[in-house]
Image (cartoon, rainbow, N blue to C red; front, side):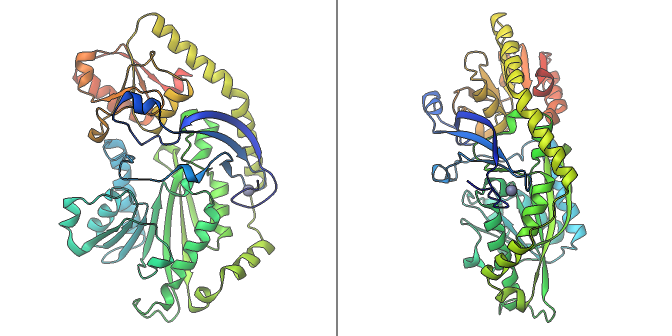
Length: 420
Ligand SMILES: [Zn+2]
């Protein structure tokens, strides 16, 4: 096994987790089905050459996203505010007014629609799990959704901005994916439908992924999920784009440090579009992108620390929960997303936590994969009256506390950070 990002020697496995649900966001209609859901192993390896962290036990044949996949974070006001500010920033920065925007992995289409509405732009979204929505149909030709992967087959769809959020970490060979995307985008200059661009034209590219630096440095164990084959840090994100030929502009930490984004560009010219991938691969092999040695050494130290502290943190969590269970306390988790699913499964909590609360109505009355908790509405807490609420994402703590206070509930609030 070589590193899927830089192809260098054998990466070091530093953590092995077994039998976790392969889908954190695929919810089940009965407890029985949820408990029997498909599971897989996670063996995380660290590459000392480029800083990439990958799941070497990942098996792509196990996955296939469908419309049942529920990963929309759009119901949280904290997340909505972030996404809206990001859309505004991208529109202003790239002067996206009356332009065309492509989004890969657009999910339910909310972000693409925001970008289109803000600058009266046209949008084309690609996602296998997209399900048609009447409000999108009402937008007519302004937005179009294609239930497929974006590839050279769709090279006729070219944009002024290509964005892709929370997708790259799901791709087993991110370098190959980016290289092939580069080739497709560089066809812009030679397409008969594109406006004539005598000096070539640039496509701005925006990618956002979870920030693995945040995950591993802050012991965010619950951010580890089967669906992520690669965990990017700023170093490996810059590396993978440079190696695929992109010009990188900036890497930023976003959403309280939980995400990282990269802005890059593809310069399409007649020459770059006819350059074969074999040629560009040969160029890349000769001069791999430079990596900041100090940054890489620090990351290597973070990974070593994570490995050293992992077991004791898990033991502390287990102990603190069984204490509350023995005292007869009613415990719920708040947040039935991937953090919640990993938390319940890694600690194998069944009787200790009775319910998972979530504000997303599409999750209600479904069941958590692996451990089988029922997902309930925040309103349900008014009758259930929990003694302890474990907040899965500390960013939502205030939002959750306010909701509870409105119901005159004042349970013990634990965040997964203080809890450990
Ligand atoms: Zn590597």
